[in-house]
Length: 365
Image 1: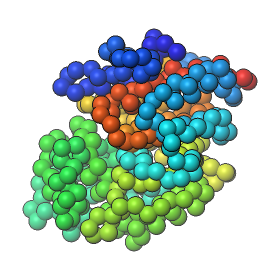
Image 2 (image 1 turned 180 degrees about the vertical axis):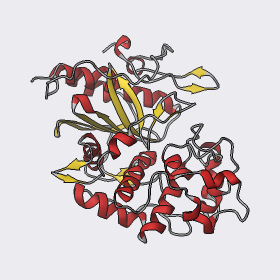
Image 3 (image 1 turned 120 degrees about the vertical axis):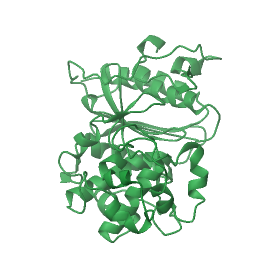
């Protein structure tokens, strides 16, 4: 594995200073500060016909992963077959649920897609009529223009409830009301403002339009057809299940969820997501001003060695990577604690780009 082979993950930006540390840096004593290429989404010219993973390359990759103190699990599926399954650093068993943090946003996007497919809502539908009882008495006129699609793509324009604003939001007596009352800092449908409040509003409107909790919908619409366990998770003071954070799924359940998207919403011959929802979710709609990554409906978009990568990203390194042309679904979970989280996330992407992808390219036919 070498630095030159890494591609697709941008330099992490904080105050304009690149903080990227690639996989080889994590194996050495210090990061050399080299910045990887930009996150252009590049379609490969040739689709490989291989199915397996090169054994020697995967041994090196697993050995490299074992040196990362925060990684807890690694699952690699190719064409639906589990070809690598590892637990690191005393992590829990692969079938034990763990907090997937903001990877919950990709699950929330799936639930919204299913609700759209069932005719309960539409992607272009304004959110204000659905959430009016919690809206300000005299809302900013722009609130009437915010759509469900804007929430999915983080383009609502409302001041964020993540980052430095997160604590005040989750300490408020009504999370939905607080999120709707944020001042506008951008026009709806323009700038990306990553905000967990946006996905929580999706959970609220899903609850109100279906008459069932987000937990009940998740268990019926995803848990049952995928054959996975979805434990209860945090709810707000009004009982709305947290939309976009704090869900718990096991690494194997995350892999099953990833496979659902890799297979265009159909699993075990059963259509779970409406036709076209995966394409809509993976269509780039905006760009993160922080990471430089492109973003669709709850999914980040990048590339590795010329192969498109679509991924769910949870704080601290709860990752689901899907590489459709290589028929790969890769799950990594981590201890979310620790300083300089950007170094760890860059290292995980390095495992994918410098290890797993070459193993798939060289895999036995």
